[in-house]
Image (cartoon, rainbow, N blue to C red; front, side, top):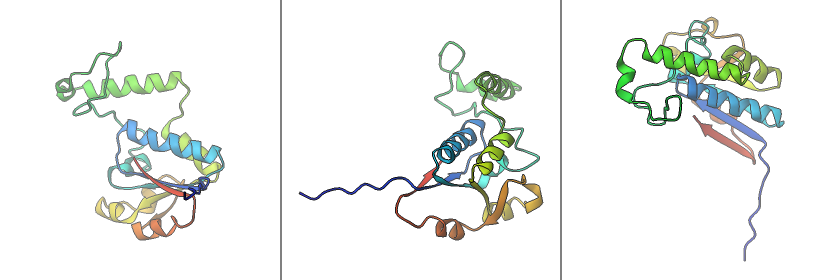
Length: 167
């Protein structure tokens, strides 16, 4: 019987491709947790995920209200997705999410990025997406180390004990 070798997790590369509040925070929480565990951590923001690292957009992230079957109303009842198209509903739900996050002392995006980089994590923007949206290095928060291609991102993934996580 063959033995299965296990290798400790040494490095995570997390890809964030969505700009809604819940997906951005999922990437930030995982990255921060990895940094706190001493795991080499690299975050790669692409397409709408760039909103999380763009100075003008990072404080304006919203919760997806349309087409989000897991969204719940207070009390746990399912959120009627059709309501999400009404004016002000998405903003209200997003404000409610931020309020709940504040109660749990979850930091804002900028502070999370600062914590991750202070702990040794690295943050990158996708060159293709940045070019597509006409974004330059100065459009991004200073925690962004560089704008790189997906090939450069994959070059960082080498080694035993590496995982790529897509959010």
